[in-house]
Length: 105
Image 1 (spheres, one colour):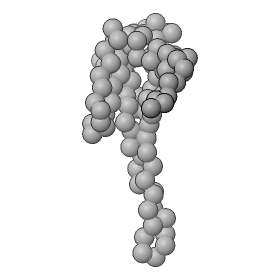
Image 2 (cartoon, helix red, strand yellow):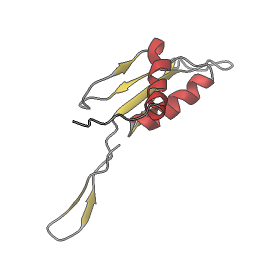
Image 3 (tube, helix red, strand yellow):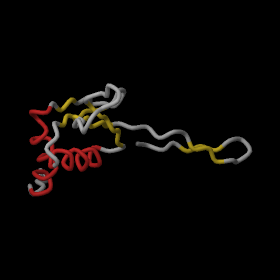
Image 4 (cartoon, helix red, strand yellow):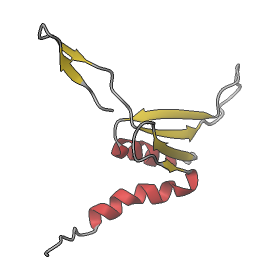
């Protein structure tokens, strides 16, 4: 999420609402007797892709089905289906371990 700050003509600081750009959705396990119908999914929003990945990895470790994506109008738009979550989580690990190549021309 991005916090937007601005000042009024009188110099007062205004803080606008934070804007989420990523979401992660997980299935919700049924526990015990339910008194009311619940949604089988739970969604949480995040400011950064890294925060979303940390949450998704934790939920995946719990054995839940996980999918993620960006929230409009974030560009580029991404949708990571449950089948692609492992590859998405590996992106940051591959990027961190791969040496950076620089153009010498």
